[in-house]
Figure (spheres, rainbow, N blue to C red):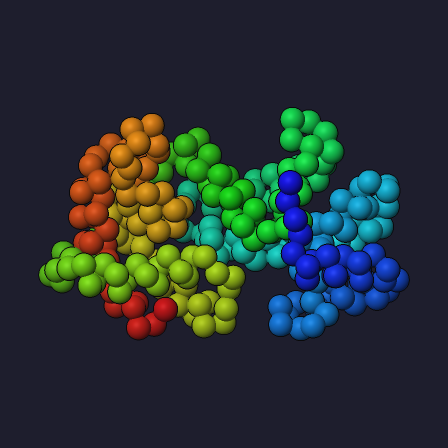
Length: 250
């Protein structure tokens, strides 16, 4: 049983009472800080309400706005160049979300969208990660690489923290003008890492796998790479040294 935050409840009550014209105006607001901005949790409720009442106009007005927000998120979380067929993976994740609305109220999990009405960002993050992991299992993990000269920068813990505290954070936020400037060279730098280092970076700092676990049944970066946790940490440290030039930029 999930409980919607008060701010979401208030927005839903307001949105339900809006004329279609006023709702369209509210839906066009993209600035999160604007007082009239409609949260994604509210949009989920409106789409579900449209489906329950067979209000096609409501669904066709709201669902594209919600999907556009998700697409913007995916362009950062699953950018071209970091994973094979990134555009196809993004499209599949959007289709998975759409399917939840199609199946809402039926199937094995009739109330699955309840959580999206309460904590949309967390729910969509889980959907995204599951989608990427399925794609990696299905398609393999071959990513284009280019040769780099051997780095003579030591992989000290400080270098590791400096590089990846920012790596992880910037793959977990919506796009900003500043991040857009650095994303392309940053992604190219990840692509240019040696295969084993790049795979460790993507698994741990993009997809969120643990380096290792005491639970032998848990899937981790180490189990996926068929090596020890220490080996994963060594690979991450070497990668961090190569990526450390971004620590002041990101």
